[in-house]
Image (cartoon, rainbow, N blue to C red):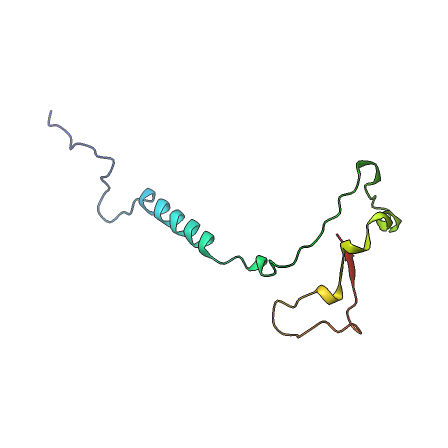
Length: 105
């Protein structure tokens, strides 16, 4: 009855069972590799620089329904309908009769 038990090895697993630790590291590595190799679609317009206005601490806009807080933002910070791009490819250009926007950023 004093027979030695089979030596335990961390690599040993019962037949028919798949150790999860041997699955997660390669799966995580593959997912991370695919994520970094996938082209960055958001950077398609790398030749365009969009300005972003930073409000001074004493002039931060309040949410009150009035837009006069944005009057200090210069016009060159405005993104208009002419700069919008349809990334789905369904439409050539926005029709100003149905869509005319000006966004200050």
